[in-house]
Image (cartoon, rainbow, N blue to C red; front, side, top):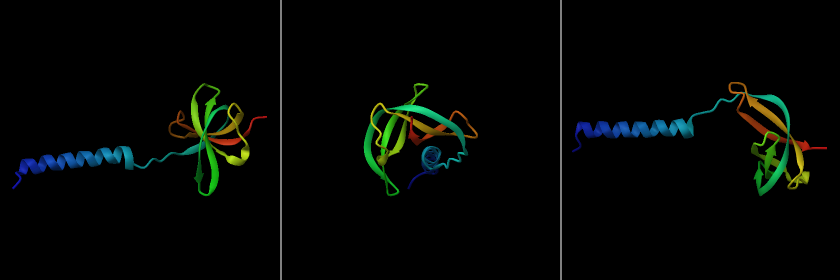
Length: 109
């Protein structure tokens, strides 16, 4: 029969594990995205095809003007190749403006 101390230690360990799982995996994120303009980027490489909600896309690694890189879903019908310049729609988090996400808008002229 386990002692009270052993049960208490086990409970603390399980509670700690549950808290860590909640903090990293389950905790809901409440981002308030707002439009932040447009950005230009250059396609560095194309990744494998995938389907998102029935629309065929290809993921592209895009190098932004500031040197950062991001992954953007590009429609297959857009005929994007490595080295092409594209225009991205930028959204930023209202609570933390440094957190941004990018979406394909069109090919740069």
